[in-house]
Amino acid sequence: MKNPIYAIVGPTASGKTELSIELALRLKAAEIINCDSVQIYKGIQIATSKPTFEEMKGIPHHLFDYVDPNIAYTAVRWAKDASQKILEIEQRGNVPIIVGGTGFYLRTLMRPLFESPDTDQRIREKLKKIKQKKGPEHLHKILRKIDPEAARKLFPRDYPRVMRALEFFFQTGQRISEAQKHLPEPPEFAKRIKIFALNPPRNLLYEKINLRTEKHFTDGLVEEVRLLLLSGVKEDSLALGAHGYRRVCEYLRGEISLERAIEKTKQDVRNYAKRQITWFKKENVTWLEGFGTDPKIKEALWEIVKKDIFHRKSSFHISQEFDKT
Image (cartoon, rainbow, N blue to C red; front, top):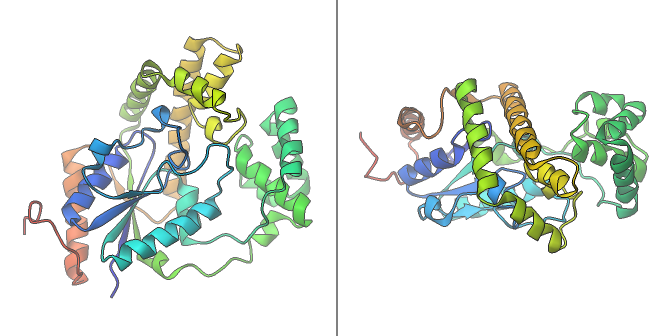
């Protein structure tokens, strides 16, 4: 019987990174796969809270900091890359631990999407011009006319996926909602993924988000964005559309004050955290009621994993330092 694969998910700032590293240390033979749609990008550093070399504590980490910021990287591409990493990790006899808050990535890994054509840059540029002139909500309005079923499933400001649905229609003449009904079979390992979702108290989570946002700006977020733009990263790239980066771009264009950029970023991230929790409530997860930094949560997860290991008579190499049985 093959070993389970563990996924640690939850809202931003909930302590997923620390909890995943703790679990990896306890399992001893484990490797971490990133499941965050912003941490994949090179140079997008401060506001992403990527784990530092010291924080990794010797645990191998994959799919971090490896995509050019100007590339419109998709969930389908991530799922292919993650599937390959899972295969490689298990061939080494180790346990994959998937970590991140991008629920759509994880869902795509477990329930693959249909194959779609490569991006037609001419179509993309036309749609970008519409977005710049009339806003992302206008793209959603167009999608409602040509594919109302797809539009109902997407937030009006979720322009990357709205744009992709429009691109698919203009490139193929088909509605993406129809294509999504003919999906590939899930990979073998999908049924072995056990998802744990962090759910800290909302007021404490929002307080932590506010403090962390202020620290990002203090740590040089504005200068990081300046350097990215000077290096050729486009303002309308998915990377700079991420929380924090988008508001800094508005500040650098003179559209808002720095103080306003900070406050709007706090609100953006709080709203995003709320959407993440809502997303995972629709998934089959085991909830951990607290922050991943809480020793009680670490122990609670470990107790679940230990029982899982022993019941399956797994070949896991459990670290003697943590094995209290």
